[in-house]
Length: 186
Image 1 (tube, rainbow, N blue to C red):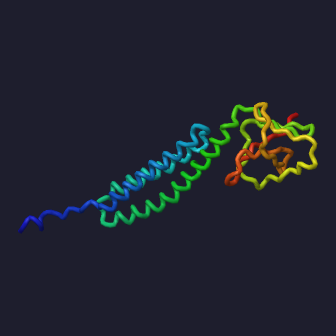
Image 2 (image 1 turned 90 degrees about the vertical axis):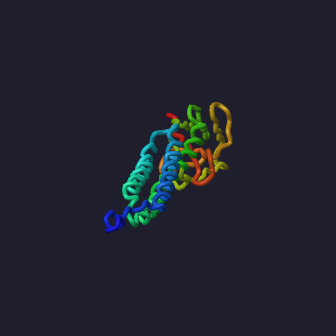
Image 3 (image 1 turned 60 degrees about the vertical axis):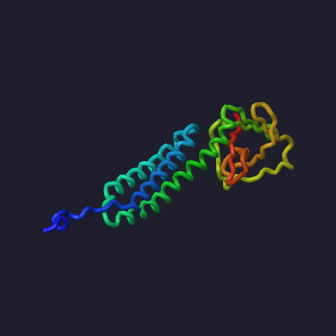
């Protein structure tokens, strides 16, 4: 008998699986990078680290099964799943980090709007990112409209909240907009 028939045939490591592991590793790094961005402003998005853990679990499964014949198909499926799952988490974190950065400019500042004899103030936290619950104010019917930020007069646009007596100041008009919600001062 020759040596080839006695020794079992060694299974080869899948080169495609190695490439897929590298792609998933870059995905995990990008996911962590995107998740970290809103954290200086709020810990509300710390849950997005679950996507990095998902990617690490996928990489571990591929490493364990790297000698299996069709592991590259599993790796391809993992990449597609991770692209959509972690991509949505990364998009959420990136978008909200941008929004939080814009709102952060107004933190610790006194934001006041005066319409006729009613004064509205911002509580330092209330923000809307959707215009659907707001309507324009007819300035022609008003005698006095003043918006100040830390005592300096400003030209930000005002809107009225449909379901309350609050006002909104549009501080950023791009995309859906960013609106600081001001309540009547009592």
